[in-house]
Length: 207
Image 1: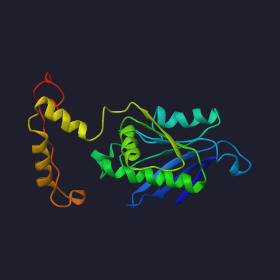
Image 2: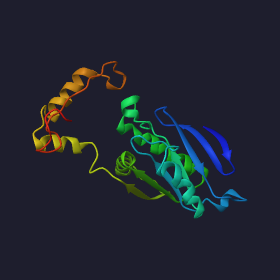
Image 3: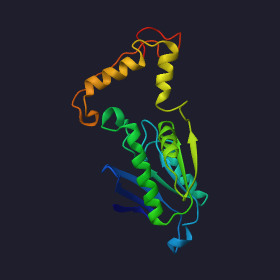
Image 4: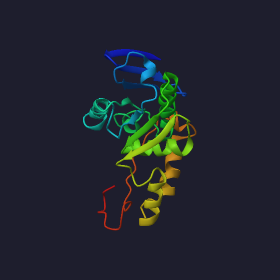
């Protein structure tokens, strides 16, 4: 774990997840003389969206300082899906549970007792997945902003409902064939064109 002071009470934090992925985050706290003065104050753990990271425009960059003006602390992290990591890197949605685990544990080790987690857009989906599989005594609530209709099985229901071509099962079987027995480390990659996957009026040729 590493820590670099940017400004007073603003620190760039680096830590690793259970599976060895490196995470960075920005910890912003109100001024204090003794650290114990801020540990009971709510702190917001912020999870970015698809194209986001904690320094991007809009909510990730502006919210921590807006919260600070009202006396609240925040911790904004980059997950393995930052910068569209599932397309540009090796990020896998299900593995982001380890990213949130590690961030919560960091705040717990720091002594924060009232943790609230905000996820927006893709971050909301990551957060729902985490909350469905985890609980922590110091996490008091979650906040979902611009949440997707659902998570992974939404696509399967859409494909089946609108009679997609190819079907969800056909795409799934083809993906297993292409990626092989070790999909996380497979050198193979392939794009799929799916017709009629989002409704009866979708134009042919559009995904």
